[in-house]
Image (cartoon, rainbow, N blue to C red):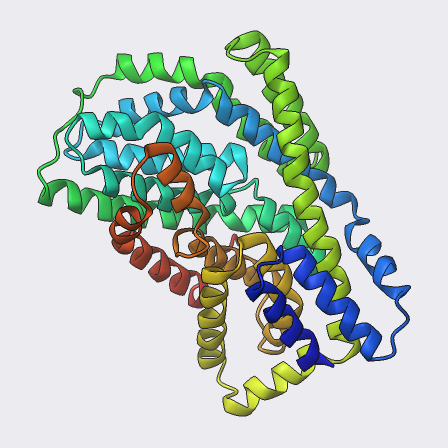
Length: 416
């Protein structure tokens, strides 16, 4: 039955069906062929989304959209520029630092890429930076958006793996910082090689002024993460607070949005959430079917028959994660791979939280690897540059992110 299920899934994907329909359709046919009552399908689909933790998903998506649409991103960029823009090629490093700032607000790679690129790419181009390289750097920086908390993929993994969202959030900081540091090093080297100009001279007064201007935006992650880690509220409650705070800041502090804008973003976030929930529900039925037919155990036995060396097995898993990220969107890939690979990781003695970080970082890299490279598409759309130019320029940043993934895998950057 498992061969029929995977065969149908890949057939439906080749035919161009949406991922949720491909997963749900393949599971339904395989269940019927295997003699499983079809009533199990809707039961498992509902069970898959019947989780309080998933309330955080639409809320973080909406909060990120509101912050991205308003002036928060521009103020964060101005603060980053005041801090390190004085270096040669410093505006490239500003791109990464701004992406890290916004990652701590949005929880989305695409939102981070859109917010930073729309603000910075015109300025980078005006100052003589290669526009394709600038756009690709920001797209690469956007991958940090799903690693540094809050992170929508980490919430999804926590629900599937039945792990603590707070533990995953806490474990995302160091890998996200490592990704940002790696990108900054490449950007700094390129800045010297290409003789990019320096920015405005370093000024504590400018930093102070930029900090005051960006203060309300900077308080977003402080409120969200501070509340979660202090135990004041759960991640789901934090997501709701984040939405209310984002609306308050946009309407009454920065006054860069109106009620019509909020309504438009509510609709857009609702559509995005519906797609994600459909994928999660269909994948819940798929996970039940795979477990019922003992597919994860069979995969584990097959892999371990090749080698039982944890280093080699983890390397094989990394290759599978990276290849999957090339062809399947991040959330969908996460939902498909978790029930397949997590049992094997546990057999190897890998901490489930650590494995969640490996999965999220590995699949985040897929956001800049065509053909399914959402961050590159966003950067191309915002800048008007051809996807081919951006995809070629992203290679140095892709290499350093893969190096960070290997580091995260074999030297777990986890707290404690």
